[in-house]
Amino acid sequence: MNGSLQIGGLEEILDGLKAARSKFEDTHLRLQERYKVLFGECVAAQTNKNKPQATIYANECTEVKKLSRAFGQIISNLDQAIKILEKIPSNPTPVNDF
Image (cartoon, rainbow, N blue to C red; front, side):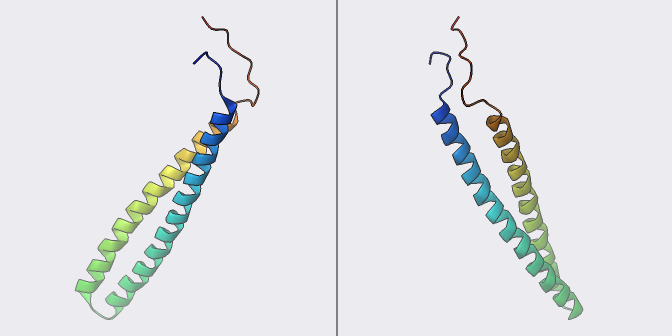
């Protein structure tokens, strides 16, 4: 490599990061919906005095919440990476090779 940035390559990377972000966001939203359903089932099981089933739902809620938080952090990291890469000018000034 001669020290120059290939803009076409940067745009492809940005497109890939944005596509990945979209997929993570979709999964994140599905996890949030799943958590709501599980939480409702947990409450229903407790209301019906079914403690073993309520415990199972509560444990599942905990695991789904952990995954949801992890996906949220990944999305945040992708957002930061995208913002940084978008700040790179489309026609950078060439850097002299040393």
